[in-house]
Length: 199
Image (cartoon, rainbow, N blue to C red; front, side, top):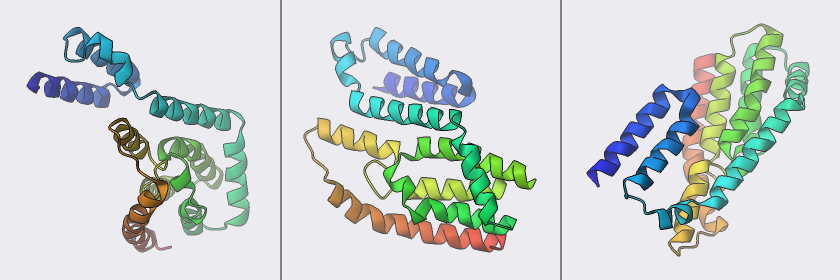
């Protein structure tokens, strides 16, 4: 048990230090768990939650197609056309995340990956520091993902584990608990955004 914890910690540290090789490190340590016998070969394939893995892979694929299609540049241009100050851009981008509850219905990791080039495009076009825009994006996407079971990778993974153990989590039950917690996090975040950046 202790050895498994040490291996997990080592894998985590290595993925933080060598970010370009995170996938290889994860696969390498997974193989190490199998080779050391901590995860029997007969159980290795069954231990993978293919539903979660393929869902996240599909979302990432859609994000890449979105970026390659140049839609991010078009969205950046549309935002710039309707907003005339740096402060208003920050608020517009942040509020857009919650206005349509986008991050509650799209996994927040691919959503952030989708929006990053949009934010970068806005910052370059207006010749401004994108830090405030990134902060708005981070707040919206991270906190909004707590509303629904599919709003964050952790939610998807947790629901998958519970399902595998025989527990069913209905969307209505998740939302009933998730929405109040989301609002409790969102309101202070937006107060902070308005206070710090003078919006």
